[in-house]
Image (cartoon, rainbow, N blue to C red; front, side, top):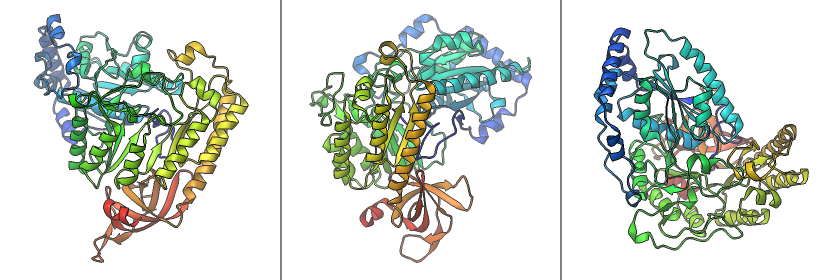
Length: 581
């Protein structure tokens, strides 16, 4: 599964329950202030009149989803429907506020949703109080994530009730996985929710919001077999960011017994390689220095858009691994994509997440080892150290097969940094099973970990076939023990870097001190260092200060389970550092 933003051990994250939000440009806010309430109501009245004269059902049927045979074609963007032209929407001057909860895929979904709304004439604000539309991009992987949304909705209820009658009604929408899973409950339990849109319905947001303007609730939670948003270039939420996520596929076919993702995001489907390369090139042109290829199971990527590759043989699984579905033949595979993406910009780092351990052919490992700009860092979700629990989870491997893969990865990529996911207290887990997970943490010694207590999800196989029989207090105790062991071993793993130089991509000032900078090394571990002058890296002897987006060499002086600290040496490049380190 993708690493959630709320609880990350060994990497910087956000606090549980606190959303991420971003702002529109100041120009949009200045334009919004030029119009009074009376003028605004007039614009909305005119907008409603035009809506009443809008299309018939025949219009929507004519513009239904394309036939499956053309699903991978890169189409030219369609002209907006006459009732949703930018001039009409800009006249209504609707301001949208977006909050993101959950994993990196939701961050990317936020960027896709905003790209669609922006094209339809919406403006963006980071001030909740001045928003006309509030959209929450939600997560359903664990009960705690959903509870954060219910709590947020209660707060928004109060905000909505305080609105003046002279103001246009505030519209609230739930997007993403929770919308897909709990659509009926959301619409009926929380009457303040005006729209509900699943992960495959973001193109429909302008229409849903238009329906909501008439005072009706609107929903679209249909899952798609072909939607990848390949023709939608996401609008980066932080224009000055040094890194970005690029979605390469959506959905998952693995059907692990604990996981809700196949039911909220649908079946696996991959973007055409050409559209991914176009987006990566755009990010390179914008100065982005690190791209993470994103999906629920990225290394099972399979682009079937090019006819000549549709008969290609399916790659083999990692030794000792199996799946519940038949091997899929044909298409351009992840090795090809990774190769092509790494060639776009030799000075751009490439990462990918989240993979399944079953899909690591030697070609992928060899490519990572050979390319200087593909990070020597892998996420290998274990979930449990007990073969019995792994079978109940339908993971398709044993403890022994997983450990054999770990050794093979370390033999193939010397110095590789490893991260993993673990679930404490899964159905039927005994104390002995738990201790096997503890021993796996000690044996592998991960650099980064993502650890959670099990949360039963409706629709999953575990919900229908297994009993959630581990008491909550036992889950908490086991989780705390796993966290403690992880931190202990990660401190040892990261301590091996003390005294050595690390290549760091500078992100900006440290949150704790303006006198320090922070960034991440090749292994995706946070590095903090003083903001001092350094050699400019050209050999001229000139001194400069590090800027966001610079690659710098940092000599590590201390390490913890989550952070490395060091001193600046000099500025460098990816190519140069690869030759020296």
